[in-house]
Length: 155
Figure 1 (spheres, rainbow, N blue to C red):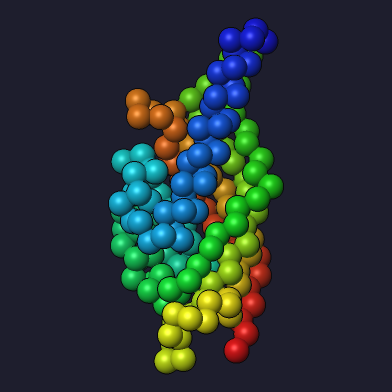
Figure 2: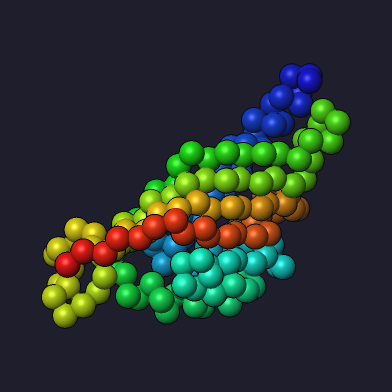
């Protein structure tokens, strides 16, 4: 590879990492406009392994907006990001896949929740599969799939 191709690959990886981080921040902050903006117009999300829905990103964002009201405190930790860029004979393509593990501690809302106690009482973990495409506006998600592996609930 030439230095120019190497630099383009590094820039792509950084931009893709920013999309994945933006995804976590949008969900944790309840910024559903930002969530929608991360996807292509045909982008889809699948939360069915965690008891959720699968469908167009806009519909899933509406579902998340309602569902996440149950969890006023939440934090996605997305780690072990394995980024695979499409390779077009030594040059980067316009498609990428990311596999990343997640740990998601949350606080359930309830009668006893006054906002002062923020210790998590619900934790989910597993792996995300992200598929991205290079668009005119930069890298965008075409598909997000949640593969929940375990969850724990405490009193």
